[in-house]
Image 1 (cartoon, rainbow, N blue to C red):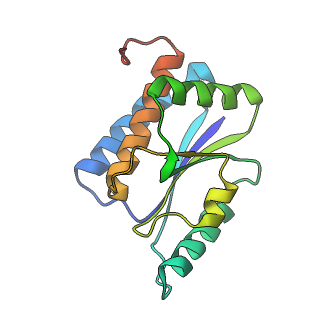
Image 2 (cartoon, helix red, strand yellow):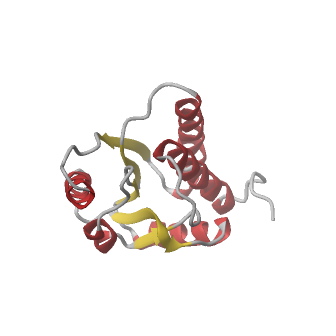
Length: 160
């Protein structure tokens, strides 16, 4: 199964980039036993449309066009469900067991996600009500994917 992390905005070199690279390397190793065959990153530039709604819609359209139509989508939005890491791992295990070809984790830009993206998402996940920069959310998403692989393989990284 291919895992895709798709985000609005470019991740420049710096500490966030280094953390994303570190977790990506870990995921590629720890994900193999649970069927993760690759980890791909998609970055699109922020829209330059006039209004926030137009920008979000344009970004959603571009992100969705880059995914396989049968991709299972986890969208990150502050209005989503806030659960535990074991809950998240269980949800991903269910998707892995379903035989879906790809899983995508979508991170919006400064304006957030369009309603059309939320409508296309299979699950909407939240790290809480706080607004966070997309660079940090990307690190958190990669860390949670890595944590999921360790939970599902009974590695001692995650502790209760």
